[in-house]
Image 1: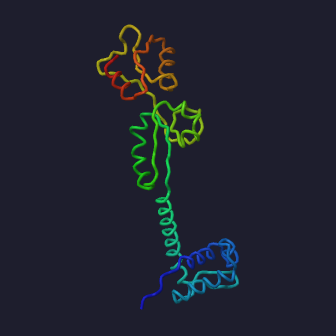
Image 2: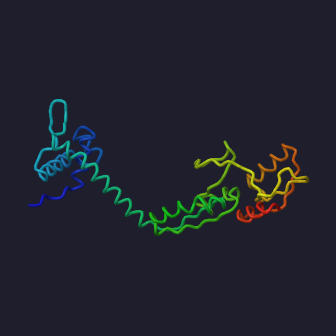
Image 3: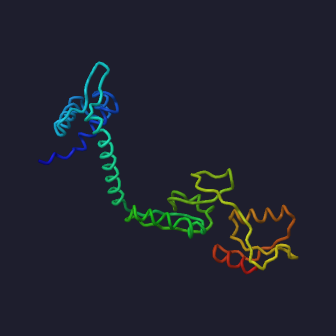
Length: 227
């Protein structure tokens, strides 16, 4: 004869009483009366055919059957909560609006969005790439989330990663060539642009803006050509 399935509500009462060390405190944690919790424990014991708790002068203690059941009860309740959360996620719908630096939008964000889309298939993602400094004042209005870069020690929000600024040039470009050094940069408002100009000024190295674009691909291609 098949045994009845374990009722998660009975297991929840059992775990609460065990964790809080008494029927009274366990009932309060579940917003139930003590008599209701006591009845649930009796029903649980009837379902498994063994006592799960003993009372003595020191309070409640688990029986051998209770010790075996407690681990399973926690796992069953955890899996149940996980399943319900996953099902709720499937029902969430709407639009998430992102503001992202272009290089992050092409290499960092897509793998993250793949996992997000699998977990939230009914959510549409709108992503704007470009300089993020103008996006920050519009966070909460135009954007739900902005991935922005700040100088070390500046800015708010949640820290995600640290980036190291480097110089890049084509293979045949000589950094020691005479005349002002041609630069291919993002428009004004880009931290890398400000850092590059400040570093060259501090080193006394003449420079000139040869190319400006919002496009990372364009800036990279032009720099590789040595413009």
